Each structure stands twice: as C-alpha cells, then as structure tokens.
Image (cartoon, rainbow, N blue to C red; front, side, top):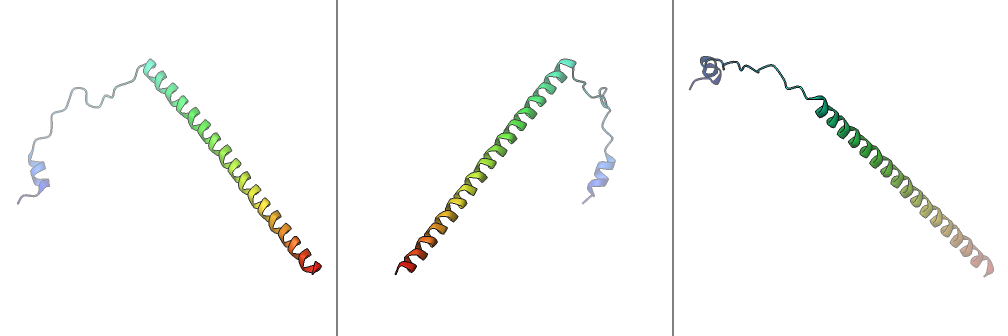
Length: 88
C-alpha cells in the first residue's frame, strides 16, 4: 500500500484562484453596524454582571441576617435555660 504522502506528492498542485489571498473588506456601514452590535452586547453584559452582583450581595446579606437571628435565638434559649436552672 502506498504512503499517503507519496500519493499527495504525485498529484499536481491546485490551480491558483484569481481572488486568492485577497480578503473581503467590509463596507463602512457594515463595520458600523457590527460595532454598534458589539457595543450593545457589552452594555448588556455589564448590566447583567451588575444585576448578578446586586443579587449576590442581597443573598449574602440575607444569609448573614439568618445567622445573626439564629445566634440571638440560641443565646436567648441558653439564657432562659440558665434562668430555669437557677430558679429550681
């Protein structure tokens, strides 16, 4: 069986195309539209990030409040339990 490199080397190179090497240049209008779309996407991303940070801060605040409430209730129960022991 022949090596794939030998087979490829035996074939003639493909003919060069007339437009090869020349890329398409976008018009000013197309570029402007693309820039506006990118700016809009960045604004949406920034707004979403800000909303997520606000939501995370609110959630952290609620968790802190819950822990504080639990500590206060535990302390109140401990104080009440201590008072019951003293009264007996």
